[in-house]
Each structure stands twice: as C-alpha cells, then as structure tokens.
Length: 163
Image 1 (cartoon, rainbow, N blue to C red):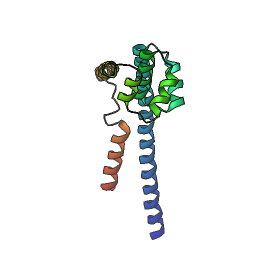
Image 2 (image 1 turned 90 degrees about the horizontal axis):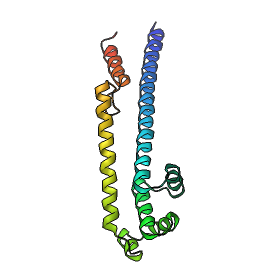
Image 3 (image 1 turned 180 degrees about the vertical axis):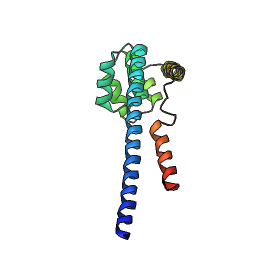
Image 4 (image 1 turned 45 degrees about the vertical axis):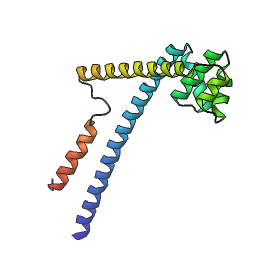
C-alpha cells in the first residue's frame, strides 16, 4: 500500500516538474522570438541611419562579433573617413580607444556618438509605440507574466490543497 502511494507522489512530482519545464520552455521560445524581432528592428534602423543594407550589417556582425553599438560606430567611422568597414573594424579591435581612432582618422567622435544616440532614441520610440499597440490590441508583451507562468501558480496551489 505504501509503495503505491509513494509511486503516486513521485508521479505527481514528475508531472509537476514536466509542467514547469514546459512552461519555462514556452517562455524561452517567446523571449527568443522577441529578441529576433528586436534584432530585426535594430538592423533596420541601423541600415536607415548608416545607408548600409541590412544583409551587409548582418554579415559584418557575424564576421566581427561586434554588438550593435560597435557595428554602428565602425560603419560611421568608415563613412566619415572614406575607409572601409573592415579597415575601421581592425582599428577598433586593436585596443585603441574611440578617441584615438577618431584623432588618427580626423573624424569627429562627438558627431558619431550623437548620431548613435539619435538612432538609439528612434529605436526606443519605435519599441514603445509597438508595446502600446500590443497593449491596445490586448496582446501581452514579453515583460508581463505569460499564461504559462500563471498556470504554474495554479498547479502549485492545487498541489498544496491536495487537489
């Protein structure tokens, strides 16, 4: 009799763990989709600001492992100095500071940083507008609790009550 009860408890614990793992997996998938959407939005904005095609920016990022900020600055320096992106990327990877690279290339670092801030502000506005549209449409955003997370709570409560 005790062994059947033990098997039942272990089974319930196993099912609970599977439910939590599934909910976490769903949350991770939603987060990954959001990151892909955000990444696409950033590439589009950078492309517009820099006059560089999105596919070129993606290839540059894959080739250098630069984040979006360094990608922006390397392209902006290249545009300001008449050099190629690859030349600027090598200089930026050489452990020189931004100011040194700007001075050596007679580029205006302040202007490039200002452009980057403008792009960042534009992306932030676009993101906030998108979140507002989602709220108006009743579509939950990624920062709110998902239905799966709510289901976890219900499952835990029912286990505590013995149901």
